[in-house]
Length: 121
Image (tube, rainbow, N blue to C red; front, side, top):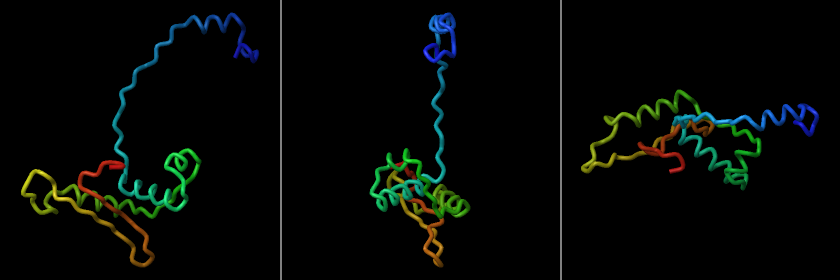
């Protein structure tokens, strides 16, 4: 700023003398909505465009999907309910997958890939 004439040399020296201590922020775990659907959409975009995930995320692109929030929430609710799955003989959860699709046009409305889905897992 001094070199550009915005502040004086005295102001520059005063700013340099200040001891700046960054504020520590707790890393909050953010629950990402529709992780399975988002991962699927990104994988499909990578397949179709030939770009990497990084190129898609920093390239300013918009990815439009057919996710229906009510359908996706219904899928997630169904997968969260243990009563919807048979009991496992061991301590592992019985797994499954579900896709809700509009049969008129093939649009995927909601999906689940596992009961304990891990992003990019």
